Image: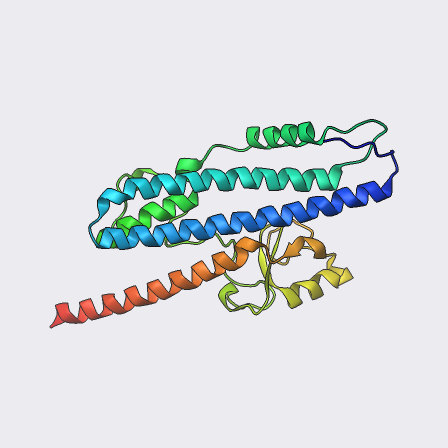
Length: 252
């Protein structure tokens, strides 16, 4: 795949940038679908564990691991697409885009730690199964591990919109910064970005990122993760009710 664009061929640059943006969006949608698949497999595994069909757990976990690796590959590809779309400048000669993408992806992979076995999605899968029969008990070896994410936590960086104070699960039009990953109500953050005196800084205390309107979006994973948080909140509420009733029984 090659290009013969001239150095200042802005039309060619515009087409490349537009194509990169479309490919990036499509790839993000694919990552969202992969995430949906992992959630579905986790729910299936929980049902199987309740029915004492533990013989299926290894096969399901292997499937989750494959999806995690596929998601990581898609993430590297998305980042490569975006980087090339932002940075590419047509030159005098031919551009080998295949090599350009391969080199960019290899650099991204080299700079990213291999965390498949400690990936939050895999951790959530394992702990959801463990909690079927061991609710409230730490997983084996958990005391010695530095656990960052559990199945009772979500991937959302902030639980409240820093501008409206509303829980992200109650936002009418949630968006997320592509740079710092903080989540906001769209109308409030766009008004914030347009206020010159604030210079578009992220409103989360301590965050140094400057926000750009076109980089604060509702990405495909955001709504999935918000829905997951709603489900987790509902599960916690049910567990609290069960615990309250158990306490009453013990008192009697």
